[in-house]
Length: 70
Image (cartoon, rainbow, N blue to C red; front, side, top):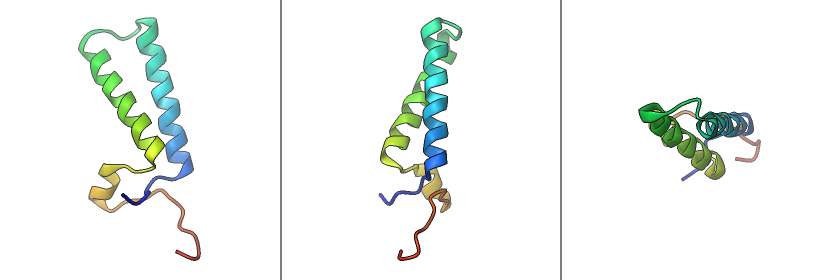
């Protein structure tokens, strides 16, 4: 797994996951939508911590800045 996520992308995913967690904890979202959003939040957190997004890899995308010596 080669890192394909930049810092901004990782930060935004973490912020979105925190917002979703807030919605779930306050009960603003319930039922099936709560489960779906919870799964999305977990996926966002996991991909942020490992700096790798399988969907980006599938499409050959990267938001990571390439250093000069790479």
